Every structure is written in structure tokens, then in C-alpha cells.
Amino acid sequence: MMLLSSFLFGLIFGSFLNVVIHRLKTRQNVIFGGSSCPKCQTKLKWHDLVPLLSFIYLRGRCRYCRKKISRQYPIVEILSGLIWAGVFYQNFNNSQFSILNFQSIFNFQFLNAGYEIFILSVFLIVAVYDFKWKIIPDKAVYPAIAVSFFYNAFSAFKFQNETMEIFIYPLLAAVIAFLFFFLIYYFSKGNAMGFGDVKLAFLIGLFLPPFSVFFAFTLAFIIGAVFGIILMLFGKKTLKSQIAFAPFLVLGAVIVFFFQNFIDLLIF
Ligand SMILES: [Zn+2]
Image (cartoon, rainbow, N blue to C red; front, top):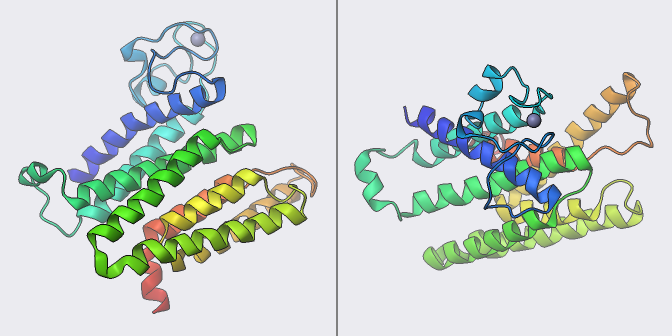
């Protein structure tokens, strides 16, 4: 029940993320203003904006101009739903989750869940944005870096005996990640990856537990390489062609984030 409702909240939040992705590109105000069809600019009504269902009902076409709606919309909504369900599962699985808990809405688990959803949503935005337009929006990454930094500082303040684990090590991991990716960026003259990937690596360093970071990057490179080879085998890309790397970084980070406990079991 809890999983289903958090998934539904995630779906709704996902349609907001689609709006954010679109408005980051068109430089509109991200938060305010009604939604319109990207093709014909007709202002959309609320029943055109029901996540997933309106896409299915309208068979993937705009109600007004009948042009195709990008598959990005339902995909982002579903992924956002999965993020919410996953985060709620991880944060509240072991505790007695009841209405009563909502009275302590400011307790740490809620804050932590909100923080994780925020960062994972930025990951999703960045992955889709880079996939579509081959660039990573600073406007999404910079606030996430700031939030992650201050959240770590705040947690370290709250759990003072774990300052090293919570604040210092992630910061070190982020700096090492930054330098590592910066070297690749620098020596490949921006061909292997862009500077946006370097900043994203810094964010992932801050967000994941320090030792998981390196698993995330290893995974990203492996998945990226396999994907690249498959594309070349099918003749869709050559060695020279640009493949956005952020989706792989994000995929590695998200897999490690959700399967951390499992990975810990395998290793230790
Ligand atoms: Zn339209």
C-alpha cells in the first residue's frame, strides 16, 4: 500500500520533472506558468496532464494538434514513480509506517527520503537532458551539489560521532571523482566526456557512500562500453560518434544506490 501510493506520487512528480526538463531547455521559469503542448503551444487542461493515463488515453498524441507526444513523458513518469517507491521502501521498510508517523513529519527519515528523491530526480533530469541534447544543465547540477553538500554537513552535525563517514569522506570521494574525470576530459580534449560529466561525477561523489562511488563509476564504464559496442555492431554509431555519458553515470549511481546493501553483502 505504501509502495503503491509512493509510486503514484512519483508518477505525478514525474510529470513535473518533464516540465522542468522542457523549461530548462527553453529557459522558461521552471516552477510557474501553465503547461502547453511543445508542438502547437495550446495550453493544456488538467485532464491532459494526468500522468501516464492521458498518454495512454490519447494514444501518445496531442489532443489538439494530433502530433506525437515524445515517449520521454511516460518513461520519465514511470522512472520517477520507481524512484519514489524505491526511496520509501529503503527508508521506511523496517519501521512501523503508520498515520501516526506523519505527526513527526520532520523526523530524520522523512528529511532523508526527501533529500534522496531530490538528488535522484536531478539524476533523472540530467540523464534525459544529456541523452536528448548532449549537454548537462548546470542549472540542475549546481543546486544539487549545494543541497548535497549542506545535507552532508547537516547530517554530520546531527550525528557528530560519524562526521568522518558522513561529511569528510564523501567530500574527499567527490574531489577524487572530480579530478579523475577531469583528467579524462582534459586529455581526451572533451571527446570522451564533457565538463558536465566532471561536475556530475562530483555530485555522485557527494551523494553515494564513499566506497560505493567507485563501484558506480566502474559500472558506468562497463555499461557504457557494452552499449557502445552493441551500437557499433548494429552499425548505428562509429568510434567517432558522440554518445552521451551522463545516462551511464546516472545508471551506475542509481544501481549502486538501490543495491548497496546487496553489494555490501557480496563484498564483506
Ligand atoms: Zn499540440
